[in-house]
Amino acid sequence: MTSIRGWEFKYRLLSQWLKRQERYLLKPMNCPHHIQIYAAQPRSYRDLPVRLAEFGTVYRFEQTGELSGLTRVRGFTQDDAHLFCTADQVREEFQDTMKLTQYFLGTLGLTNYRLRLSKSDPNDSKFAGAQGETWRRAEEDIRFVLDEMALPYEEAPGEAAFYGPKADFIVSDCLGRQWQLGTVQLDYVLPERFDLKYTGADNKDHRPVMIHRAPLGSMERFMGILIEHFAGAFPLWLAPEQVRVLPISDKVAEYSTRVLSALQAAGLRASMDARPEKIGAKIRDAQLEKIPVMLVVGVKEAEASTVSYRDRLEGDLGALPLDDVVKKLREESASRSIRQPPPPPEPPPAEDETEKHAY
Image 1 (cartoon, rainbow, N blue to C red):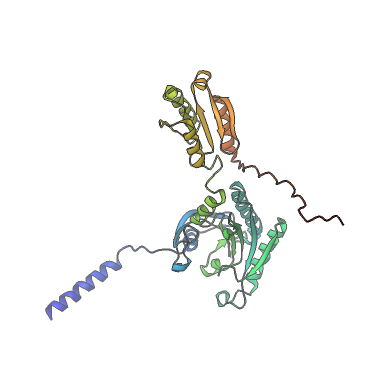
Image 2: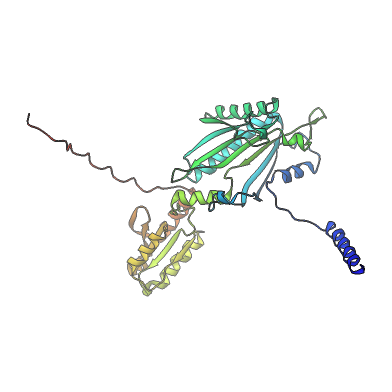
Protein backbone atom coordinates (compact mmCIF):
# COMPACT_ATOMS: atom_id res chain seq x y z
CA MET A 1 0.00 0.00 0.00
CA THR A 2 2.83 2.36 0.87
CA SER A 3 4.51 1.65 -2.46
CA ILE A 4 1.31 2.41 -4.42
CA ARG A 5 0.76 5.69 -2.56
CA GLY A 6 4.37 6.62 -3.29
CA TRP A 7 3.82 6.16 -6.99
CA GLU A 8 0.61 8.18 -6.86
CA PHE A 9 2.45 11.01 -5.13
CA LYS A 10 5.24 10.94 -7.74
CA TYR A 11 2.65 10.89 -10.55
CA ARG A 12 0.92 13.96 -9.13
CA LEU A 13 4.25 15.77 -8.85
CA LEU A 14 5.11 14.85 -12.43
CA SER A 15 1.70 16.03 -13.67
CA GLN A 16 2.08 19.36 -11.90
CA TRP A 17 5.58 19.78 -13.33
CA LEU A 18 4.40 19.04 -16.87
CA LYS A 19 1.64 21.65 -16.60
CA ARG A 20 4.28 24.30 -15.92
CA GLN A 21 6.41 23.39 -18.94
CA GLU A 22 6.27 24.93 -22.41
CA ARG A 23 4.53 22.62 -24.85
CA TYR A 24 4.97 22.24 -28.59
CA LEU A 25 2.15 21.30 -30.93
CA LEU A 26 1.87 20.79 -34.69
CA LYS A 27 -0.06 23.60 -36.37
CA PRO A 28 -2.40 23.02 -39.33
CA MET A 29 -2.34 26.66 -40.53
CA ASN A 30 -0.63 30.01 -39.99
CA CYS A 31 -3.77 32.18 -39.80
CA PRO A 32 -4.33 32.23 -35.99
CA HIS A 33 -0.68 33.09 -35.36
CA HIS A 34 -0.79 36.12 -37.66
CA ILE A 35 -4.10 37.12 -36.11
CA GLN A 36 -2.50 37.12 -32.66
CA ILE A 37 0.35 39.29 -33.96
CA TYR A 38 -2.19 41.78 -35.31
CA ALA A 39 -4.15 41.73 -32.03
CA ALA A 40 -1.03 42.15 -29.88
CA GLN A 41 -1.27 45.95 -30.02
CA PRO A 42 -3.89 48.63 -30.74
CA ARG A 43 -4.35 49.42 -34.42
CA SER A 44 -5.44 52.63 -36.10
CA TYR A 45 -6.95 53.06 -39.56
CA ARG A 46 -3.69 54.86 -40.40
CA ASP A 47 -1.79 51.58 -39.79
CA LEU A 48 -3.84 49.61 -42.28
CA PRO A 49 -3.23 47.65 -44.36
CA VAL A 50 -1.04 45.52 -42.08
CA ARG A 51 0.71 42.83 -44.11
CA LEU A 52 2.28 39.81 -42.37
CA ALA A 53 4.10 37.13 -44.35
CA GLU A 54 6.20 34.03 -43.63
CA PHE A 55 7.31 30.75 -45.09
CA GLY A 56 5.42 28.77 -42.48
CA THR A 57 5.53 24.98 -42.11
CA VAL A 58 2.17 23.38 -41.38
CA TYR A 59 0.95 19.80 -40.90
CA ARG A 60 -2.21 18.09 -42.14
CA PHE A 61 -3.17 14.46 -41.56
CA GLU A 62 -3.66 13.38 -45.14
CA GLN A 63 -4.92 9.83 -45.56
CA THR A 64 -2.33 7.26 -46.61
CA GLY A 65 -3.90 6.68 -50.02
CA GLU A 66 -3.87 10.43 -50.73
CA LEU A 67 -0.12 10.90 -50.25
CA SER A 68 1.77 11.35 -53.51
CA GLY A 69 5.45 12.29 -53.77
CA LEU A 70 5.96 16.03 -53.33
CA THR A 71 2.50 16.98 -54.58
CA ARG A 72 0.59 15.78 -51.50
CA VAL A 73 2.42 15.50 -48.17
CA ARG A 74 1.59 15.75 -44.49
CA GLY A 75 4.15 18.40 -43.61
CA PHE A 76 4.67 21.27 -46.03
CA THR A 77 5.70 24.91 -46.20
CA GLN A 78 3.52 27.70 -47.56
CA ASP A 79 4.53 31.13 -48.83
CA ASP A 80 1.77 32.40 -46.59
CA ALA A 81 0.65 35.96 -45.88
CA HIS A 82 -2.31 37.68 -44.26
CA LEU A 83 -3.34 41.23 -45.06
CA PHE A 84 -5.49 43.15 -42.60
CA CYS A 85 -7.26 46.08 -44.23
CA THR A 86 -10.35 48.27 -44.08
CA ALA A 87 -13.46 47.41 -46.07
CA ASP A 88 -12.66 50.28 -48.44
CA GLN A 89 -9.21 48.84 -49.15
CA VAL A 90 -10.36 45.28 -49.89
CA ARG A 91 -10.74 45.46 -53.66
CA GLU A 92 -7.47 47.30 -54.27
CA GLU A 93 -5.51 44.95 -51.99
CA PHE A 94 -7.14 41.88 -53.52
CA GLN A 95 -6.30 43.08 -57.05
CA ASP A 96 -2.67 43.79 -56.12
CA THR A 97 -2.39 40.30 -54.65
CA MET A 98 -3.85 38.76 -57.82
CA LYS A 99 -1.24 40.65 -59.86
CA LEU A 100 1.50 39.38 -57.55
CA THR A 101 0.39 35.78 -58.09
CA GLN A 102 0.24 36.30 -61.86
CA TYR A 103 3.75 37.77 -61.76
CA PHE A 104 5.12 34.74 -59.88
CA LEU A 105 3.55 32.20 -62.23
CA GLY A 106 4.42 34.18 -65.37
CA THR A 107 8.07 34.57 -64.34
CA LEU A 108 8.34 30.80 -63.91
CA GLY A 109 6.66 30.04 -67.22
CA LEU A 110 3.59 28.49 -65.58
CA THR A 111 1.13 30.28 -67.84
CA ASN A 112 -1.15 27.30 -68.54
CA TYR A 113 -3.65 27.90 -65.75
CA ARG A 114 -7.29 28.73 -65.22
CA LEU A 115 -8.97 30.81 -62.54
CA ARG A 116 -11.67 29.51 -60.25
CA LEU A 117 -13.98 31.54 -58.01
CA SER A 118 -14.51 29.09 -55.15
CA LYS A 119 -17.80 29.73 -53.38
CA SER A 120 -19.80 28.18 -50.55
CA ASP A 121 -22.34 25.39 -51.00
CA PRO A 122 -25.70 25.84 -49.23
CA ASN A 123 -26.10 22.05 -49.08
CA ASP A 124 -22.81 21.48 -47.25
CA SER A 125 -22.85 21.70 -43.44
CA LYS A 126 -19.26 22.98 -43.58
CA PHE A 127 -20.67 26.31 -44.77
CA ALA A 128 -23.42 26.63 -42.17
CA GLY A 129 -24.33 30.30 -41.88
CA ALA A 130 -22.36 31.18 -45.01
CA GLN A 131 -25.33 32.49 -46.96
CA GLY A 132 -25.60 35.78 -45.11
CA GLU A 133 -24.64 39.31 -46.11
CA THR A 134 -20.99 38.79 -45.15
CA TRP A 135 -20.39 35.94 -47.61
CA ARG A 136 -22.42 37.60 -50.35
CA ARG A 137 -20.32 40.73 -50.01
CA ALA A 138 -17.07 38.77 -50.10
CA GLU A 139 -18.09 36.92 -53.27
CA GLU A 140 -19.14 40.19 -54.90
CA ASP A 141 -15.78 41.78 -54.04
CA ILE A 142 -13.85 38.91 -55.68
CA ARG A 143 -16.13 38.86 -58.71
CA PHE A 144 -15.69 42.62 -59.13
CA VAL A 145 -11.88 42.32 -59.08
CA LEU A 146 -11.83 39.46 -61.58
CA ASP A 147 -14.15 41.34 -63.92
CA GLU A 148 -12.17 44.56 -63.47
CA MET A 149 -8.97 42.71 -64.47
CA ALA A 150 -10.78 41.08 -67.42
CA LEU A 151 -9.76 37.63 -66.20
CA PRO A 152 -11.84 34.67 -67.39
CA TYR A 153 -12.94 32.44 -64.52
CA GLU A 154 -15.40 29.76 -63.56
CA GLU A 155 -17.47 29.59 -60.39
CA ALA A 156 -17.24 26.47 -58.23
CA PRO A 157 -19.76 26.04 -55.37
CA GLY A 158 -18.40 24.10 -52.42
CA GLU A 159 -14.71 24.84 -53.07
CA ALA A 160 -14.44 27.83 -50.71
CA ALA A 161 -12.57 27.81 -47.42
CA PHE A 162 -14.76 27.52 -44.32
CA TYR A 163 -14.14 31.20 -43.56
CA GLY A 164 -14.68 32.74 -46.99
CA PRO A 165 -14.63 32.55 -50.80
CA LYS A 166 -11.40 32.63 -52.77
CA ALA A 167 -9.79 32.91 -56.20
CA ASP A 168 -7.74 29.81 -57.01
CA PHE A 169 -5.10 29.40 -59.72
CA ILE A 170 -5.45 25.89 -61.18
CA VAL A 171 -2.20 25.07 -62.99
CA SER A 172 -1.84 22.29 -65.57
CA ASP A 173 1.41 20.34 -65.48
CA CYS A 174 3.25 18.79 -68.44
CA LEU A 175 1.10 15.65 -68.17
CA GLY A 176 -2.13 17.62 -68.31
CA ARG A 177 -2.93 17.09 -64.62
CA GLN A 178 -4.43 20.07 -62.83
CA TRP A 179 -3.21 21.35 -59.47
CA GLN A 180 -4.26 24.21 -57.26
CA LEU A 181 -1.19 26.32 -56.56
CA GLY A 182 -1.74 30.03 -55.94
CA THR A 183 -4.76 31.16 -53.96
CA VAL A 184 -6.12 34.50 -52.75
CA GLN A 185 -8.87 34.30 -50.14
CA LEU A 186 -11.19 36.98 -48.77
CA ASP A 187 -12.22 36.63 -45.15
CA TYR A 188 -14.80 38.63 -43.21
CA VAL A 189 -15.38 35.75 -40.76
CA LEU A 190 -12.18 35.22 -38.75
CA PRO A 191 -11.82 38.91 -37.79
CA GLU A 192 -15.30 38.57 -36.26
CA ARG A 193 -14.51 35.32 -34.44
CA PHE A 194 -11.23 36.65 -33.04
CA ASP A 195 -12.78 40.04 -32.23
CA LEU A 196 -10.19 42.00 -34.23
CA LYS A 197 -10.48 45.79 -34.16
CA TYR A 198 -8.96 48.99 -35.35
CA THR A 199 -9.75 52.57 -34.45
CA GLY A 200 -11.34 54.46 -37.31
CA ALA A 201 -11.22 58.14 -38.24
CA ASP A 202 -14.39 58.57 -36.15
CA ASN A 203 -12.47 57.35 -33.08
CA LYS A 204 -14.70 54.24 -32.88
CA ASP A 205 -13.85 50.56 -33.13
CA HIS A 206 -14.22 48.93 -36.54
CA ARG A 207 -13.71 45.40 -37.83
CA PRO A 208 -10.83 44.79 -40.30
CA VAL A 209 -11.03 42.42 -43.25
CA MET A 210 -8.47 39.67 -43.85
CA ILE A 211 -6.97 38.57 -47.16
CA HIS A 212 -5.15 35.24 -47.12
CA ARG A 213 -2.68 34.81 -49.95
CA ALA A 214 -0.19 32.15 -51.06
CA PRO A 215 1.07 32.84 -54.62
CA LEU A 216 2.78 29.46 -54.94
CA GLY A 217 0.87 27.54 -52.27
CA SER A 218 2.68 24.47 -50.96
CA MET A 219 6.37 24.85 -51.77
CA GLU A 220 6.75 21.07 -51.99
CA ARG A 221 3.91 20.74 -54.50
CA PHE A 222 5.16 23.75 -56.41
CA MET A 223 8.69 22.35 -56.72
CA GLY A 224 7.38 18.98 -57.90
CA ILE A 225 5.25 20.61 -60.60
CA LEU A 226 8.03 23.02 -61.62
CA ILE A 227 10.53 20.18 -62.09
CA GLU A 228 8.02 18.30 -64.24
CA HIS A 229 7.09 21.45 -66.14
CA PHE A 230 10.68 21.96 -67.33
CA ALA A 231 11.42 18.20 -67.37
CA GLY A 232 14.52 19.11 -65.34
CA ALA A 233 15.83 21.42 -68.10
CA PHE A 234 15.61 24.70 -66.20
CA PRO A 235 16.22 28.08 -67.84
CA LEU A 236 19.59 29.68 -67.19
CA TRP A 237 18.49 31.88 -64.27
CA LEU A 238 16.77 29.00 -62.48
CA ALA A 239 19.22 26.15 -63.10
CA PRO A 240 21.18 24.95 -60.04
CA GLU A 241 24.28 24.77 -62.27
CA GLN A 242 24.20 27.45 -64.94
CA VAL A 243 27.53 27.04 -66.76
CA ARG A 244 30.06 24.26 -67.06
CA VAL A 245 33.62 24.86 -68.28
CA LEU A 246 34.95 21.99 -70.40
CA PRO A 247 38.74 22.01 -70.90
CA ILE A 248 39.91 19.86 -73.82
CA SER A 249 43.19 18.88 -72.12
CA ASP A 250 45.45 19.62 -69.17
CA LYS A 251 47.39 22.07 -71.35
CA VAL A 252 44.64 24.68 -70.80
CA ALA A 253 44.09 23.97 -67.10
CA GLU A 254 45.36 27.39 -66.03
CA TYR A 255 43.20 29.30 -68.53
CA SER A 256 40.17 27.10 -67.73
CA THR A 257 40.55 27.98 -64.07
CA ARG A 258 40.67 31.67 -65.01
CA VAL A 259 37.45 31.25 -67.03
CA LEU A 260 35.76 29.56 -64.07
CA SER A 261 36.89 32.32 -61.70
CA ALA A 262 35.54 35.02 -64.04
CA LEU A 263 32.14 33.31 -64.17
CA GLN A 264 31.93 32.86 -60.42
CA ALA A 265 33.08 36.43 -59.79
CA ALA A 266 30.13 37.56 -61.94
CA GLY A 267 27.74 35.71 -59.62
CA LEU A 268 27.09 32.80 -61.96
CA ARG A 269 26.76 29.22 -60.69
CA ALA A 270 29.57 27.57 -62.62
CA SER A 271 31.70 24.45 -62.37
CA MET A 272 34.49 22.79 -64.35
CA ASP A 273 34.71 19.24 -65.68
CA ALA A 274 38.43 18.50 -65.33
CA ARG A 275 38.11 14.73 -65.82
CA PRO A 276 40.62 13.06 -68.19
CA GLU A 277 37.83 12.32 -70.67
CA LYS A 278 37.43 13.16 -74.35
CA ILE A 279 35.65 16.44 -75.00
CA GLY A 280 32.80 14.64 -76.76
CA ALA A 281 32.07 12.65 -73.61
CA LYS A 282 32.14 15.80 -71.47
CA ILE A 283 29.70 17.57 -73.80
CA ARG A 284 27.39 14.55 -73.87
CA ASP A 285 27.36 14.29 -70.06
CA ALA A 286 26.65 18.02 -69.64
CA GLN A 287 23.86 17.80 -72.22
CA LEU A 288 22.30 14.80 -70.42
CA GLU A 289 22.55 16.65 -67.11
CA LYS A 290 20.69 19.55 -68.79
CA ILE A 291 23.35 22.19 -68.11
CA PRO A 292 22.14 25.37 -69.91
CA VAL A 293 25.56 26.55 -71.17
CA MET A 294 28.84 24.71 -71.87
CA LEU A 295 32.07 26.61 -72.50
CA VAL A 296 34.66 24.50 -74.33
CA VAL A 297 38.27 25.62 -73.83
CA GLY A 298 41.17 24.51 -76.02
CA VAL A 299 44.60 25.82 -76.92
CA LYS A 300 43.22 28.23 -79.53
CA GLU A 301 40.72 29.66 -77.06
CA ALA A 302 43.42 30.07 -74.40
CA GLU A 303 45.69 31.96 -76.82
CA ALA A 304 42.86 34.29 -77.95
CA SER A 305 41.17 34.70 -74.54
CA THR A 306 37.94 33.27 -75.95
CA VAL A 307 35.66 30.30 -75.23
CA SER A 308 33.72 28.05 -77.55
CA TYR A 309 30.11 28.73 -76.56
CA ARG A 310 27.72 25.78 -76.66
CA ASP A 311 24.06 26.38 -75.78
CA ARG A 312 21.88 23.48 -74.61
CA LEU A 313 19.07 24.53 -76.95
CA GLU A 314 20.87 26.23 -79.86
CA GLY A 315 23.99 24.09 -80.05
CA ASP A 316 27.47 25.34 -80.96
CA LEU A 317 27.60 29.14 -81.34
CA GLY A 318 31.33 29.36 -82.06
CA ALA A 319 34.23 31.12 -80.32
CA LEU A 320 33.37 34.29 -78.40
CA PRO A 321 35.49 36.66 -76.26
CA LEU A 322 35.39 35.66 -72.59
CA ASP A 323 34.33 39.12 -71.40
CA ASP A 324 31.42 39.17 -73.87
CA VAL A 325 30.30 35.72 -72.74
CA VAL A 326 30.30 36.71 -69.07
CA LYS A 327 28.30 39.85 -69.88
CA LYS A 328 25.83 37.88 -72.03
CA LEU A 329 25.25 35.27 -69.32
CA ARG A 330 24.82 37.88 -66.59
CA GLU A 331 22.23 39.76 -68.65
CA GLU A 332 20.27 36.61 -69.53
CA SER A 333 20.31 35.44 -65.93
CA ALA A 334 19.21 38.85 -64.63
CA SER A 335 16.38 39.09 -67.18
CA ARG A 336 14.94 35.75 -66.00
CA SER A 337 14.00 34.92 -69.55
CA ILE A 338 12.65 31.49 -70.43
CA ARG A 339 13.73 30.10 -73.79
CA GLN A 340 11.93 27.03 -75.03
CA PRO A 341 13.34 24.51 -77.51
CA PRO A 342 12.35 25.27 -81.11
CA PRO A 343 9.20 23.46 -82.23
CA PRO A 344 9.76 20.39 -84.40
CA PRO A 345 9.40 20.98 -88.15
CA GLU A 346 5.96 20.37 -89.54
CA PRO A 347 5.72 17.09 -91.46
CA PRO A 348 5.25 17.43 -95.23
CA PRO A 349 1.67 17.10 -96.41
CA ALA A 350 0.72 13.48 -96.88
CA GLU A 351 0.21 12.38 -100.41
CA ASP A 352 -3.23 11.22 -101.43
CA GLU A 353 -2.89 7.47 -101.11
CA THR A 354 -6.47 6.64 -101.93
CA GLU A 355 -6.91 4.16 -104.72
CA LYS A 356 -7.21 5.81 -108.12
CA HIS A 357 -9.26 4.35 -110.94
CA ALA A 358 -9.20 5.16 -114.61
CA TYR A 359 -12.95 5.31 -114.88
